[in-house]
Image (cartoon, rainbow, N blue to C red):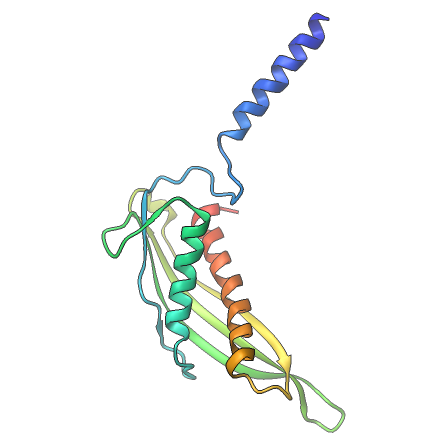
Amino acid sequence: MRKIYCLLLITTSFLLNSCGVYNFTGTGKIDASTFQVNFFQNNAELVEPGIDRTFTLQLQDLIQNQTNLNLTKNGADLTYEGEIVDYRISPMTATADQQASQNRLKIRINVRFTNKNKETDNFEKTFEFFYDYPATTQLSGASLNVALDEIFDRITQDIFNESLAKW
């Protein structure tokens, strides 16, 4: 009986200790209370109007939704800044008569992350992702929005993981 009581006590204390460090987003303890996301200028050779604003807002929303950090315009503990460096549409596969059957939209974004409280976390890194679509589809309107959502969802999550989740 005594062994069961000791085992139960050890198991309970282990579970209580381990629960205090992590949360569902995987961020653990963040040594900051504020963040800012500066405007990500579109410096790509091929410019798609409005994607710079869309990306900036999507990164802000992701951080706000997955942390308890407060968004500020300047002087934040954590700062995200950078630029869209590549927006490219390329043919991916061809049919028997040498016509493209699938295209790929690829976006690459350079990010500079600064943590005022822990300078060892600072980085400058490029993040990219792609979206494949049929060559018969014109990438505009709703189809462009679907592509951008998928690409930006992945890139913003990768930035979040690199800067805060440490996965």
